[in-house]
Image 1: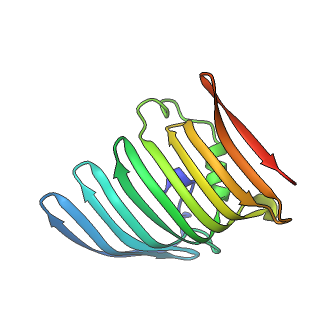
Image 2: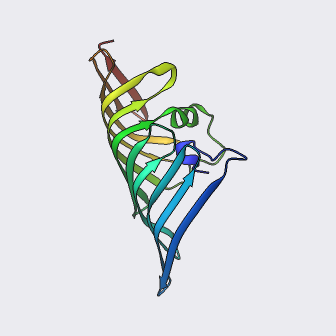
Length: 178
């Protein structure tokens, strides 16, 4: 289960994971990690210490059939920094998780997550795709602090979304030629 991207392995779907581990001075290195299942997979390395995940580098991620991207995760002060780069990603599970109501207590002492993504294509619902996606996003729990997105629609029009501070609240500005 990867709740932060709205993905979970389906019940009854076989999966296999292989990896090697080495622990030195309380730091565990998980290398040659390979997850394979029907229609999904990932490969990479992780470093875990007494505080949890220190860093991860997934050189290949495919959570949906057309996915083709890589992810780097690194613990930073107060949370995690995430970099996503690649050819394609299916954003439908992520969109569904964002549409779900927040769970009580999900905003207070949650960790900060900062994401920078550069993807050639993202796919959504009803065969909608965006190309040349550039995204900067940061949030703590359900509170979004930064959203800066630019992409191009199928018809070649720009789409831009930006979170703008508006007093104690934020306002989402969305602009598109479509």
